[in-house]
Amino acid sequence: MTVAGELMGSPSQRGRFGDYGGRFVPESLVPACEELEEAFDRAWSDPGFRRELDGCLRSYSGRPTPVTECHRLSERLGIRLLLKREDLNHTGSHKLNNVIGQALLAKRMGKRRLVAETGAGQHGVATATAAALFGMECDVYMGAVDVERQELNTFRMKLLGARVHPVHSGSKTLKDAINEALREWVATVETTHYCIGSVMGPHPYPFIVRELQRVVGDEARRQCQEVLGGADPDFVVACVGGGSNAAGTFAGFVDSGARLVGVEAAGGAAMARGIPGVVHGMRSKFLQDEAGQILEAHSISAGLDYPGIGPEHAFLGEHGRAEYYEASDEEVLAAFRLLAETEGIIPALEPSHGLAWVVRQAGRMIPTGSSVMLTLSGRGDKDVALVMELCG
Ligand SMILES: *Cc1c(COP(=O)(O)O)cnc(C)c1O
Image (tube, rainbow, N blue to C red):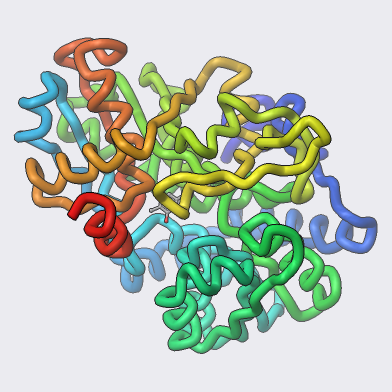
């Protein structure tokens, strides 16, 4: 159990991580947030719930995922590189860790329907997967522009029995889909759980999603110690969209001596270029114009195109316990190809951002001989067509 006040422990009563976080929702949603907070606290300290969740993650999702040492790439970079293989999880990324936990929690709360937002469609597919597994209804809100851009994932969700609702407001993308999913939750809260996709939104979501993803960091800590003869890695690296795979990874190492590094897409770098503001129920950092309008994020990987960042990352960055850097589309593509060629692993473009930073900094910010653990948050099958188009 975590202790309030500890780094990556429980947030304060009002869901604050320093100046960030909180619960900025219409009054009609406050009881739902409070009910969820209470239900999660009870479930999380209930060994029966933990056993059920662990059992699902093991028998359905394939956990624990391994840690792989990259011998050929390590030699080339002059470091010791280990990958936490979330690409081997069912549905191909870390997303299912969160969704299975929230779906089990929703069932325990007596809800029979899940609503979710999705941008590129990956969180929608994960939510539809969990809904099918547990026999729940599923409605996914997706910007109309994204529905067209991501027709394969739209069809996948339908195959899994979900209804996909195109959202026509605003820029018709992820941020608008989140607003719509929140509205739908307000209207149907008696029967419905809002299954949020990253460490964002009003309290208690950033806390719940981080706790559900900490399995990544907790497993990796033990597995790295096995490989490194009892030592922790010198660097722990993860890519950051909303920040859930990074938060889960960091949670396992926050009390170690490892330097914690989050890598954002240069076109969506809310840590580097964001301004504090209140959006989607939380105070955090967002890409905004001078009038405070939220800007759209743009990068080669749709999974990192969120114009904000989870509030706990904003806090960890200001505190100094974690550091945040950027990677450009060009170096991401090079890193994607490098891992495929040297290790026989085709990564998703999102964690290729983390790898791009490692490749750039090996022998510089990362001293030669250092050990580096990178969370490979997903597999690259979904990105192969795009890379083919870009590189031939
Ligand atoms: C969705 C996604 C991400 C970004 O989400 P976080 O909440 O920042 O982890 C990263 N990698 C993969 C493979 C994804 O599918």
